[in-house]
Image 1 (cartoon, one colour):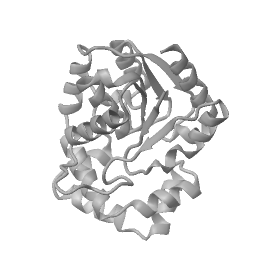
Image 2: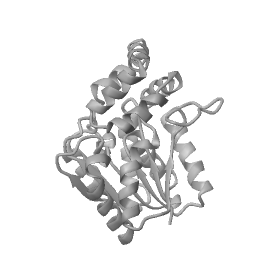
Image 3: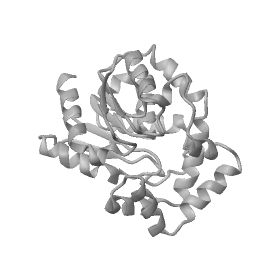
Length: 250
């Protein structure tokens, strides 16, 4: 059964390394890491880099795999999972995602996202962030919880194309777009779901908001106490156990 993983911003599929190792130790072998255009993968000509465009990109990738997948998303990758779940639930056997607060009706985007969503300010912010020397970018991500070796891989991929995708994606997701997606999901055909709640994640709303969304979607929850946005590193074993149990129950 294909287990398909999608990462977010401003990352590459390198963030899954530790979790994949833990999953393989538990007997999982059919693991696929998909990199959204601009985030570790080339941007096709004419690609709009909007929330809907990424949703459709992911739908195409899942169709190529034949559907029936167990889909896992992190950060905007979670946003793409929710988009597919609303549009093509038939492609999924199950889903798991963090950042469920993004689609809560009361969610307010974090400060960095609001800057990216603001014309002029966003361009300046992205230029400053991605214009730093590569070593400085890597040190910044390492200070936020990404292991140094992975931070170096991620920093290497952060270029002008990624910056342009960041601006387009976040602007397409300005509220009420995410709240509207959440409302649509509450009336969509359900698939077995797991909401991963990192208790200290500053970007995804409160744990209570995430739990509320999970309840609305009929999904189970796994709370990773003391974990922040990049839970897949320090909590790789705990997360792998939760995912394996979720897949076996689906």
